Amino acid sequence: MKKIFKTINFLFILFLFSGIYKNALAFNPSSEIYINQAYDNTNRSSLNVTQIKATNSAIFYADKDWWSSLSSLDQTVLQSKIYLISSEIEYKIKPVLNNTFGQEPAPLNGNDSRLSIILTPMVEGVQGYIRTSDFVLKTNNTLSNEGNVIYLNGNKLKTVSENIAYSFIAHEFMHLISYNQKYINKKVNEDTWLEELRAEYAPTIVGYNNNWDSSYLKIRAIDFIKNNIISFVDWDNSNPNYSSVNLFANYLVEQYGQEIILESFRSSKVGIASINEFLNKRGDNFDQVFQDWLITNILNDCNVSSKYCYKNPNLKNLTISPSSFYLPMNGNSALAISDTFVPYMAKYQKISGGSADLNFDFENASDNIVKRIPYVIVNKDGTKKLFFFEFQNNKSQKIIIPDFNKEAVNLIIIPYNIRNDNNFSVRSIFKWSATITNAGTGTPVNVNPSNPTTPTTTKPTTDFSSIIERQSLLISLQGKLIILMQQLISLLLSR
Image 1 (cartoon, one colour):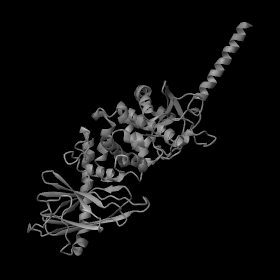
Image 2 (spheres, helix red, strand yellow):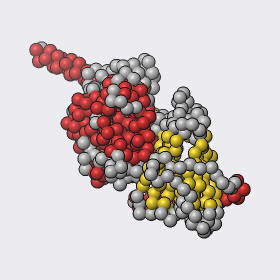
Image 3 (tube, helix red, strand yellow):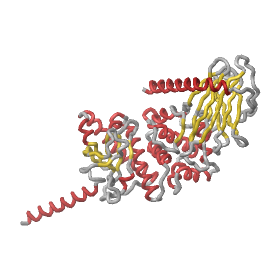
């Protein structure tokens, strides 16, 4: 009888422990798991999973259909990589990011604080994500998976190095911390661009960018130099967005130390206001720092100014790729452009070609509060000189570069926009025209070489409106063709 009683007690205790363990899981993996339909490679909104590994730091699941379609070799490779990832989470990612930024949300069910990581195939270009709906109970949102869940692109995880895989996890884990610290604790919604900036910088904090050749930063830097438009405050979830905030984060930390990231995170303010809270104490402001960074992406020369360069030796040769516009090499020619931008958008544009005096007219957007638009003249020997269009008294400025393409071979302009209302639904218009005059004469037009930031401005002496009408379309098409060729070359070189 005693033996039977002991057996009943044992079974009862086992039943209790099994119940606790079940409730402690981040979510119930036996039911359908909800996913972000926009990122799924077959447009699904839910899937079934199978558990592939459980460790002290995380429980790993895989999309059941996807996992069963993999070869035994691919499954073995992934399981080996997952084991290494779980160790990194436990001993590096979690402790470093928790000590730096704080804790992720507490478990919704039970007391199991392990992460739930789901491997599933995603659309090209997506490395992973989290769902904020997972942080509430199903009684509040029926689509919740009720836990700290990270979704990773299984196909990408299969091919990337361990160091890049760790960086993916660090990025997504930073989102979990941010949701808890900003949204739950401070009751504020962080601006997307700054939320992603911190997540992009998380691998650097953990140390995964120390080895340049295998670093996450190198991948982002290669993507960044292909950009010719900076626009991340108005977030569209594009690869240029992510590479831009990554490089901007590195620039901010180089200029002000890691505290600029930490203090903006601790602030109850969000976005630009939280960065300004830090900068204003030091006599700076976001708008000026943003302009300095825009210039850095072309100039990148610490000898000119410490504000205009990356200090990371691996980034010392980084320059962004402007959109190219070409003027014919023979005869008088002209090109006119009308373009638009939203607040905190910059467009890098380069003018080349021609073989005489370059007359360049720039018309600032009427609602743009930026009164100094930077431009750079690049000489044949590769040296660069920084200038500014000054718009304190009027909205248009003209410069003349004598014998363009003889000594000065490129003019790079960096128009960008800041509006008082920061209304991203309204696009502001800027215009410029470039004309080549005195073709074949080599006659110089006076400029003021003693003040390189304020070249002498003069009024146009010739009406080239008819030339513009005949040639602008042709030259625009030439420029687009060159851009396509540059992109093709970059693609071939990156392989």
